[in-house]
Image 1 (spheres, rainbow, N blue to C red):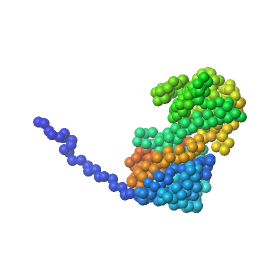
Image 2 (image 1 turned 120 degrees about the horizontal axis):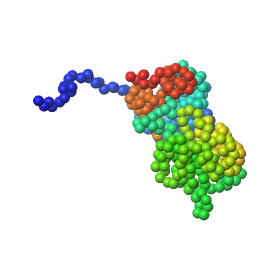
Image 3 (image 1 turned 30 degrees about the vertical axis):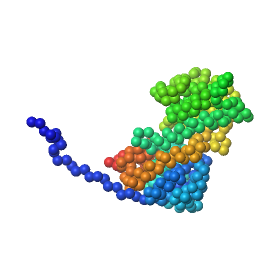
Length: 396
């Protein structure tokens, strides 16, 4: 006998109740950045206007947006309250920063605050993590946030900027007569094009390659992942030399290179791919932009520099080792950050706070490395050799 419904459907089932969330009003504090010549800011005036229109309150330290060419008046006109009192900003329920807090800023944080910022684990000390734990802080790291495609949107967009900027910076340095070759990074009729070598075929390498090719340079790119090289070739859709990392092939390429870009990214320290003898074989006045410097750099000659003193000369090669390249283009980087962070904030408010939002949004949940004082991220725990509890256990 035919049945209109399967039998298992006719058996009484447990009632599923919808989870009710009460919208919350956010009080967001945005302090002025004080570390590493940081000029970026997490939210633009337009984003502030959107949040204020949704009933949220924003308090900002005076001058917080100046590095990105956003004035206090720009923010005030959108509804933000401007203050000269740094401690008052840190009394907010949510604190937004680009750089992670230092010890003095961590002292300002109130217990149970939601901190959203970069973590930069390789530059952190265990004492700061413990201080955040003591204050029962819930901390979200830019580096760990994921979108609905399981990608890292902030890491991706800042890497895009770093990749594009690396070639533009190289072109600027290459043109300087007192340190560079006084050479135009381009393709002029009757003049041999510049040679650019990129080591690393991730996001940074991809956008560096696209920019260099767009300027007319000859590009050679090295990576140990054939799949990444294949992917990059399909994305660029232009003539591109690719190779796995081979010391002899790299040395041959560097002897002809005008520009070398280090673009290897990873969870651990960057492996040394370019030795000092290889650098010595490069032409005098060549430029080396090491985007991987924040993880140690790709070369034995890599050296950490700053935006105020960005270059050092070694063996006649110009070395650029600034770790936070996107801060050089602070307005573009800030617009990019704001586009990603604002929707997360609206979702947190819509779901009644970080608890409700993290319960339903796995990408946001993955960004939490401290939850109400409990270390909740495996990578951070392993780096500091500390105990942790998986973040998912809090939302079963």
